[in-house]
Image 1 (cartoon, rainbow, N blue to C red):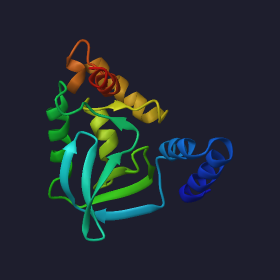
Image 2: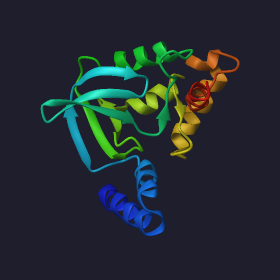
Image 3: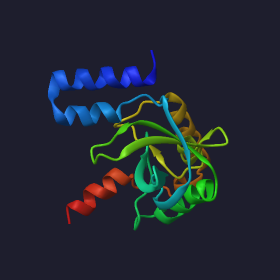
Image 4: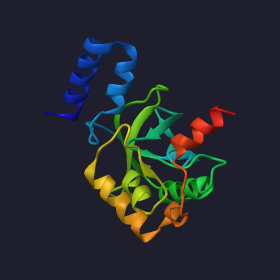
Length: 172
């Protein structure tokens, strides 16, 4: 079954069981491979998991699927952003669209020369696997290796996941 067909079936199932919020959640649970592929350039790196890609002549904000990197203003936020920028700046990037998130941003897997940028950020320790939306065993294994080796943000004995940082920031 193709990625597009799996995505369409997930959306139909979500509509049947729960309406609009479920549709957004189903899109977040889309498979890591997709039929929609575009070779483009990244024109801006907002943070460690969000970029602006040139699509149809305009810069479109896209979110990297299955990962969550530290926020701007959070410990390791700038290092994660810089790591992503170093991987994509000035290079042809394959953008594999796998769905949309709750903020209606396209969810993508970025690849450079056949290497998943999403996975590479996790492998180097600059992002968590966003387990609320992904149970990808390969990504989880990469995160475990980075954690054991104290790479990237795992050098901090008690790194704060970005979802907790955002929740605490909203609670102020």
